[in-house]
Image (cartoon, rainbow, N blue to C red; front, side, top):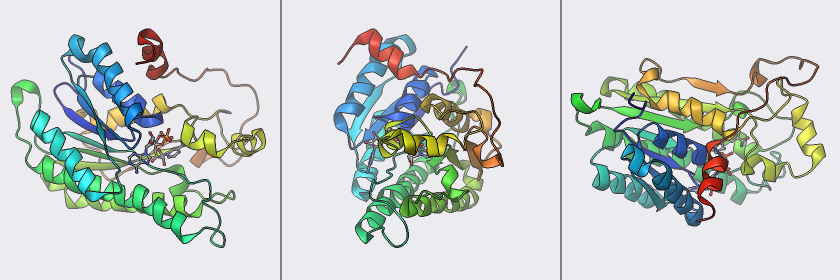
Length: 295
Ligand code: NAI
């Protein structure tokens, strides 16, 4: 059976860690050629090399790492140009890279430089990624034999904090994610007649470096855990699966959504009591890394 992204070309930003890493692995396992963009070059290169080993020959796909700072327009343009040179098209743009700065705080305490840095990566990065993806996707030619169409799918990572207020302040981050939601809706409307879909993925709190580095004490983690209906943080692979759905033609009639993957957090008044009965899923990265060892 062909994979859900068979013959498609996907760019994933922030692909060296967390959601981006699991998504790059999952997209490749579904038949996509993947371009892994990150400021952390060794992490992106390691991931690309693991993908080549695990899926390259078996599925006939390629994985390439590209050093990209998404807040720099020229680097994002070069990233998309690279995908076009290698593969001649771009079907999926996963604008996933983002930061939550440790000095992000209240309206009173957040410094302008933290605000600007957060906005440059989390908002401008998504704008640049969307801009060059749209230009590339406009040029996509249909290929019926390969199951390829015109247009494409843009997935922008926002957050549940764009929808809910946090009493534990992170003002710049929250504002940046609200901007991603609003921007994505407008992208979806502006380009709907070009066959380009745009959706915002809104993850709940996850067990990835971004949040776990921020919540560096048991007290900080417990302050959040008490609000989570399932009693646990989410896993990167659970976001990757949602991103795969939004990337693939399975979601062909879905555009402009705030796609919440938050374990029920945003629907929660009081959390249920009791033990968690279903264990969280295991991601792809750990299994593949242990199979091939450090590269
Ligand atoms: P992560 O910290 O595990 O991975 C983020 C990756 O982005 C890293 O590899 C990092 O090097 C890269 N990156 C950072 N700045 C970059 C830049 N300027 N250009 C290119 N790459 C850059 O984070 P995680 O958890 O996987 O987060 C991914 C996205 O999900 C982010 O947009 C984040 O805001 C969002 N998110 C995360 C949540 C969580 O609880 N972890 C919750 C809601 C949203």
